[in-house]
Image (tube, rainbow, N blue to C red):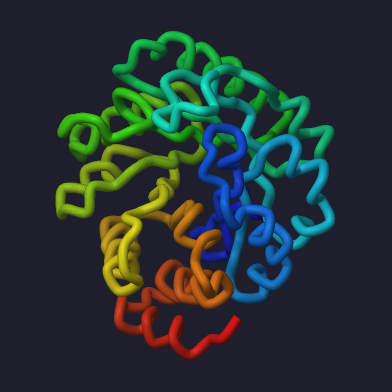
Length: 259
């Protein structure tokens, strides 16, 4: 856990694992090669696929490494209609990973299968002392209905995944004050996933919001990998997560840094 989170118990995590479930992977490889520089700018942890952990290992030594051990069953369908177990804790141990992550879909058609995989990982996690991060997404991967983004539903999904044994919850936030319910309903650290694809000031405002709601950090993908200044973005996120910066302060920092 001390590799995934900084000494203050918070984490700026970079999601580089899109190759496992999406075609939208522009910028991922370039960002992976910049991880050593990102660590100097405040990056704490990376989420990666098995192939990345093996083939990009030289870039990840300075950061915590969380291995995605599930994968989509339909890589050309961006909605990720289903996922499947691909690897497990033993694979993570062999690769020297600091933790594992999967998606869990409470309320979805495949809820039973994702629950069973989560429970198996929990048992292995306890045996090998490897932290288990669960990406709790109510009703499925995509936000398709108002319920999918309802903080009460998200809070239930998050706590349900914690009760299956997750050491860390990664989940979506709605951007409303009711997001406090998500964090208050958990007793383990909660990371906010992604966030809106928007202008920088709006995005920094969202990150400041989730931190004010009690999140222990963020797990960000395209908002870093597809940003024209990824190092500046990581610096701004580091200030928001670790220094309680405001959105305006983060924006000023982003503007000052040239990649």
